[in-house]
Image 1 (spheres, rainbow, N blue to C red):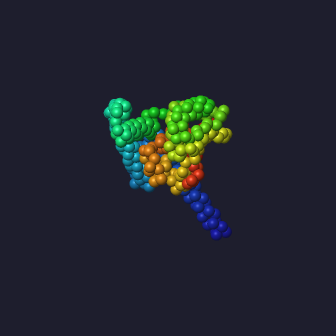
Image 2 (cartoon, rainbow, N blue to C red):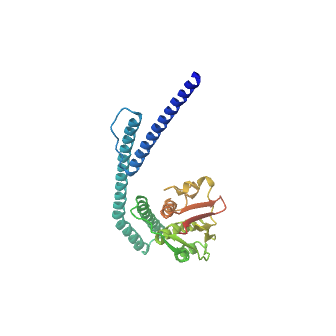
Image 3 (spheres, rainbow, N blue to C red):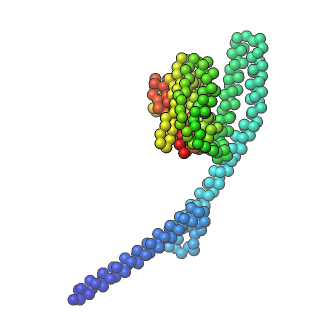
Length: 299
């Protein structure tokens, strides 16, 4: 009988301890949950320090949040300085570059030797390259800092693709490249200005890397949630090991060293698509051309 009583007492004590531990754990959990909610809202303040484990955790969280705020503030200030610097560079170089292009154009009309004309042409090409680089840096900086945002609207893709076809047709004809656009009735949710820039970069690259007599085809693939504007070329192709690298800023594959470019077009295209909840993919292999697909949301 005594053994049963002791067993019942032990069970009661164990139950009481379990209940106390449960409520203590629940209280600690609720306090931690409240700390995290306050931190998310930016309202966290540590309570009175009392040497407990939860109090030490509060102090550490406060120190971490304080350091995070300082780091974020420093990062924002650095971005603002970079944005200001790029803006100043763009403003200060726009007129000199325009003058260089004007003077080289006038000089090219003079009675020069063949070698002199070639040098003038090279100077003009380098000035155009510099202007493109600065313009691309400004656009990229605006997108990255949120200074300029995409404003997507639901629109048919056909007018944009037809406009791009007319824009790049002369460049394709200069290289005897067959440029085609497949008819489409698909609509997507996109910013017309920025998306024209993005797809234009893909077409420009396709023409640039396709040898004379090749083909560049623009098609649209439809799906329930996304549609893809695909630019396929008959160029040299891209090794699989380069697929991820080519979207990095200023990266140029070793095989592209002899082709004019600065390595920022694909990076800018990716940033533009990301700003519209889209993305880009490449399918390619050496000797088999490349297909770049710009995916745009349907709604």
